[in-house]
Each structure stands twice: as C-alpha cells, then as structure tokens.
Image (cartoon, rainbow, N blue to C red; front, top):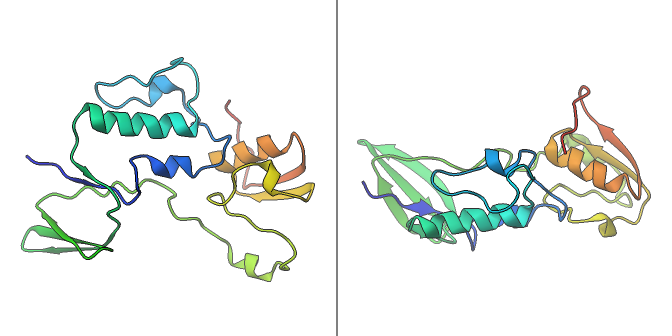
Length: 174
C-alpha cells in the first residue's frame, strides 16, 4: 500500500507554530508519542508548540513518509469507489482509501455577538494571539474554556485583569 500525505502548510506541524507563544500541550510527552518514536525531553513534562511541530516533522522524516507540502485540499468527491481530491493549486489526487486528518478545532469559532462590539475594543481570535505584548488594555475578557483559552487566561492573569467566560468550572492542569 502506498501512502501519500497532503499537508496544507509549508512545513509539517506548522499549525502548532502559529499557536500562542506560551502554548503547551495539556498532556505530558509520554502520552503524545507516535508509534516507534519517543518525544525528546522529560517524559513527565509538557511540550511547547515548537517541540510538537519539530516532533511531527522529525517523525515524518524518521519514517520516510511521503508528504507533499503546500497542498490545501478544497474538495473531495467519491465515485465508483475512488476518492478524488482537488487542491487549491488545481492538482487532482485519487485514492481508494482516504483519511481526513484535519485535527480538532482548526477553524476559529467567532460568536455573532462580536459584530456588535465597538471597533475601539480590540478583538483577537486564538490564532491571532501570540503574547501579552499585543494587548494594551489591562482588562481582558476571554471567551472559551478550552485548553487554549485557559492557558492564555493563566498567562495574561500575571499582568492583566482577566475574566474567563466558561460554561461550568473545570480543573486547570499544568
């Protein structure tokens, strides 16, 4: 069986590099291993965004995976037991088996109410936030109680007044 991986970014794992500067996985290295390759570092520690990206890239190299970079798939059709994939650069790929590995939460969910917020109030989505230096106001509202929202809230709480809007109380892991 031949396996081909189409990666939409310019490097494997680059999605992780666009995360906030302080971003870490919320599970330790020992729980984030791909088959046959240990993630370097303290196995009880939590890897940062660059470690995750580097690990994914090294894994592909180590296993000699066939990866094509800058291949953003925009359509998939299934006819006569064959998948046809079209990329934004107008290439077509065909396969008898397809794994959609886009990951969870790749698209930012912006609430409709955000349109009613005055323009002078700065709004950032998680893919735009990198570090506290971007924020001039000392009063910050974070909407979202996922791991990213909680990590950013914890980071900003050291220098800002932070309100974290969430559905129900959840524990915060290191």
